[in-house]
Amino acid sequence: MDLRNTLRASERFVPIGIFGAFTLWYVGDSWAASSRPENLILILPAALVVLGCLGIELVKELEYQPDQLLENGRWEPVSPRTLGLMGLLVLYVGMIPLAGIDVASFFFAAMSCWLMGERRLWVTAVFALGISAICVFAFSRLISTPLPLTTVF
Image (tube, rainbow, N blue to C red):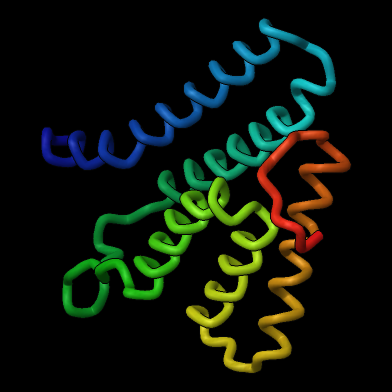
């Protein structure tokens, strides 16, 4: 393996290792701070999902062949839809303290549906209302985490 291939391999495997190490450190540190279920109810399942995804990505990277480019020999750029969803996520996080998690979740889910191509208003409204209700229920009843709410729910 020459230097060029080694550098390309490090570009692919180092981020996976960094994310995995950070996840394991975070779980260990959280466990050391408090091993009570109330503290770990979100952290452990999320860490298992992250580590599972990293494992899948590691397998995909091991099977990767460098000639798997598009037909024209270039990588496909990030789509405008992806950039729009990233912008919506930033807007969602910024809206939570101002409008409450219920309104922010409704707006985020509705706009995400529209951005992904759903144009039926009733489908978008039902989906967004369901996502918003699930967020409010999960944070207020299951986890008992106080979050800013409006008077919607």
